[in-house]
Length: 395
Ligand code: PLP
Image 1 (cartoon, rainbow, N blue to C red):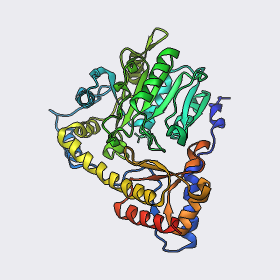
Image 2 (cartoon, helix red, strand yellow):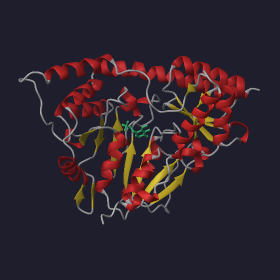
Image 3 (cartoon, rainbow, N blue to C red):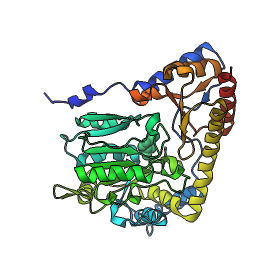
């Protein structure tokens, strides 16, 4: 009898989005024709920018001609794509080698696949509230999870402490769901901790493009010492609207070694065995994001989401409700009013204001009593939702 991976039995039901969908459906069934203001999901609503579309069209045409046709692409990424990414880092003063960049089909794929590099006996540290995939990918791999709670007191950006024994450390900054961003000083503490303990940091930078404060780090490689302890996983999903198009990149420094094994070389071996890379067409489209015009256009789209964030944070300011995020991240993370639980507040917003958000408790138990708004929705709906919020909560 074949033995399935029994670790799957240890997965908890991913009930958060299921329960939201159930409650929302029940509301719509009861209130025929009701319009809902959807501030729940973290999917983008604006299309790809013109520069990307142009590059995608050109790449499709290349594939139609013998002279410009591309077959298999290099597994770790086309040189033109990897150098576009390296140039993007260089622009911010971070020097990375082209061969330290790996193309991916997105951060989710990579966050799961990268676990191949590590031994199962090492524990994974997940700072909560957290993007649920970190926990689930490790449970599937049979790795033990150490949960580190964060909260209002540490600004949802906690520091390491000596009792932490985990060797694989997840840091997501700007954070989903809290929108909090680690400062350089705080990241330095984690980098020092990892170098001293031999841990490796998996730095999820999926939302780096939303950072607007000059002194906040976009990349862990802005921190001295990170090249010997960190892997950075990034995505064009939210940066450039690639959620349905799929492309991302991972940076593994050549200095990163543990027990005499080089993680960059191991990942080359992994990719050349387990993938045949990302299509020429997609890499061409993705490389266009890093051109001057591409950057201008994606920033214009991000500005739309930022205006949504401002509508929500202005409303919360007016109501005197505590929140974080919104400024350097596409999520606003608020304290539920009047001591309500996350789900109580979800029900209130749905019933009384037809607004759908995400209960914080779904991102880990320390998210209880908090609530997440996504700013990726339509500006018109977000504006109405912000007004409805003020109306409802100033009662
Ligand atoms: N990391 C974080 C923190 C996310 O919030 C998401 C998606 O919401 C991802 C990774 C996955 O991104 P991708 O679309 O590149 O798989």
